[in-house]
Image (tube, rainbow, N blue to C red; front, side, top):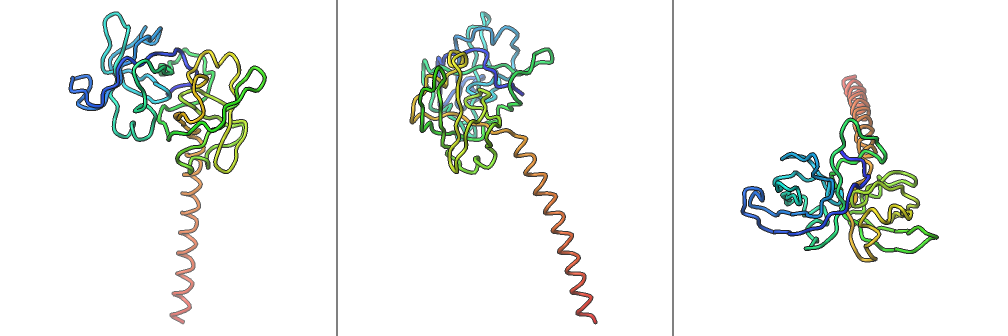
Length: 228
């Protein structure tokens, strides 16, 4: 679990489509350098969010200057990590611990999909962004003034249309995350507030159960009438 408060901007040092090493697991892998404080208390198997994607540390050096993580096919399908190249900047955040103040919102690191930047414009000393999700079904869970994680950054939704949503990034945040460096046409990782998805499932289950009971009652009444 993460907060969406980015700790450091790291740098991609290598992306491999097929990494046959033990730490690569015979699949795709991502190696991140310029990691700052991210590895201060690292252990093998720890979770680190890279552009909002929860990844497992499979290798790091004794000097803690880099770490490697494997990328599952599902991760490559759902996220923008497969588009990263050497020297690409990435947001980094360690999983939360019990003594950390919770400043953002509950971010699982389970990206729902990507969204294209369709508008980027200044608004005073802030930057206004508008995004169009590739999977339009995600718009169901995006509400004005609700939380959303964009490349792992906890942000507040400022506006919603039928197929887009907007946010505004203040000057301080612009210096701390990679989004400020992106342009129209670039893609970002999006994780909607999972509470909305959970609530939808609970309501659907309750409605289905109620309708199922109603159908059974109707069948019972019809059967009784037919027997008469």
